[in-house]
Length: 239
Ligand code: UDP
Image 1 (cartoon, helix red, strand yellow):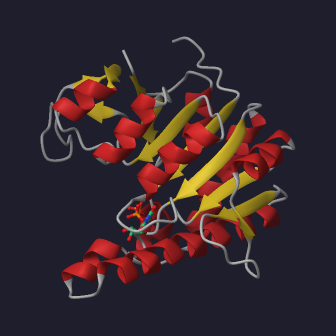
Image 2 (cartoon, protein in one colour; image 1 turned 90 degrees about the horizontal axis):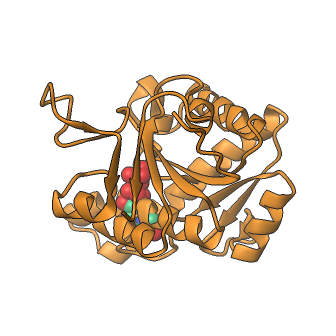
Image 3 (cartoon, protein in one colour; image 1 turned 180 degrees about the vertical axis):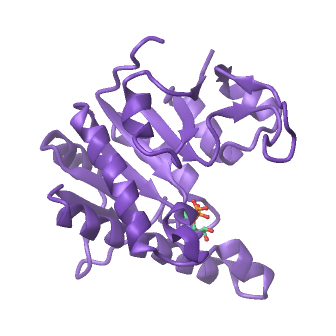
């Protein structure tokens, strides 16, 4: 398979990836394994920006379902993503990889506030840029934040790490033998309602021509392998 050769990528992982076997919160050993993936990806020569979700700690919609006011609940979810980002920064730095958290919501005593210019500059310097806080706005998700940051930071692709090795016509865990796609278009993903990312994120990636590469984050070494065109993944493109 041809080498994708992306110079700069945005890697999106859900918060759930960080909870490891404990089923909730942040498992530092698991954060370490994901950090190793990021470091290996950088070693291929790519610049890496990261967006981490917050679902391992708090999801606004779950709080709202239990009677919380949605905006406040989403702000809690946004802060959960900052906690994950700080954990990842700490682990990356401990491994000798320079990383910076840039938050969509200002918290100047905790980390720097996001700007595209700052993010691009840090990436050029070879730092891992962890974009925390999603879009910074309630009613959005970190998938949409990832599509937005990938466009703003002029990334060649949005790498969406999932628990399966690409895009399927149905969930392969519940539908054995479900059709798997090597490539698919954003419009097909939307028309078939395939659950890769929410519709707002897919539309944003489509409209800004950011390809989405869907692959399994559960296999060690996979981010670097996919970056080099090896391994199994599905590429979602405009046409
Ligand atoms: N969130 C938000 N706006 C954003 C990104 C996230 O309000 O731009 C909140 C929202 O409540 C969401 C939570 O943060 O449920 C955690 O993000 P997400 O569900 O995307 O995390 P993931 O499922 O990727 O772990």
